[in-house]
Length: 386
Image (cartoon, rainbow, N blue to C red; front, side, top):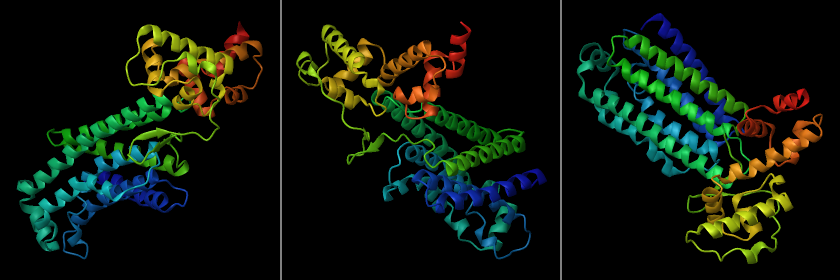
């Protein structure tokens, strides 16, 4: 093993073991943190495994040869479970172990090798390991599960992102931006590792993949340890049927007198005239009651206040207005903030943001720039300059 790779693996193993302890045994950690801690442990063991084969003589560790080879066959499952539990802090269940079937399959296929003696393993690796069908199948499973679970993770994030935009008025959109970047980098890592098997630049590509995974996973692990709720959307929860539902800690919004103006609740599609009438009623409610100032406002609460089903309200916003719930509400909030800044540019922006219904500074900054193309400070400076 080249000396550069040895240094890389030693650093990776040390960091992995340390972060694993911090994430698994911390009292304030979430299930997402513990999943990431297991991932760090598996990474550390994967990096330590090759050092056993460097010892030419049979020793007390020789029997462990091979067990760490296939640990990467669990990385796809760990990525999927981390994304799922990071967004919604749901409990871990025994059924989640089914995601580790690829790892178990690799062990079953290569059981003869794994349970052989240390001496037999060393002889096997030095002679015909490259011709082993079992090892080749295990490696194929390793790469296959990685790309399959990347697809599962992408579908999961897309589902949660759509649900958040359609039902929540206050969440940090950067949560999903960072998760998409995580998937893209993970795709690059596995692409490099796969390409290394068919390229004359095997060492360069493989080392680049190992370095990237150390930087990526351990950076997220450190951030997760500092902030256990790193990617969590507090308003999300899972009901008894396993579906996403929204909740809030505030009091229900007051119902108004618009109930008589909307059609009875049903699941049929609305025609254009009814959608237009409903949209007018919703906008009137938002302007008169300033419901958007409620940081806990959700699609359910607004639909209850107006007297229309969540299905119909979502249909009106999407088809009549061309916006999801998140865009619809935050357009009012940003408009309110901009109007207040025009009246008094010296007002404290953070206080104004909290009064406008934003739940945190990071969420406000992300949403403000998304709608105006400027940071709040840049927008105020522009107002003062003009």
